[in-house]
Length: 71
Image (cartoon, rainbow, N blue to C red; front, side, top):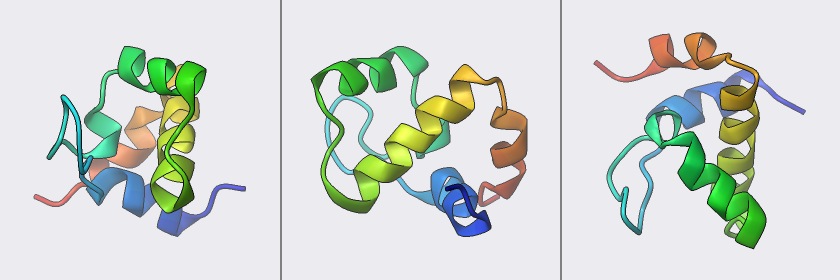
């Protein structure tokens, strides 16, 4: 289930580790998210948001999230 807070969090939560540390989730490359999908997303809220981000990217719906980014 996708809610408004999920969209805001995807637009404003920074990746806390790895190659793309510091980049907000919506700006992560789709290939990176696909790699996690094959290996396993992290546990908890971060993994949930990363999985939703991948779905949003696959469906081409980034336009819904990008306006929510902090300026």
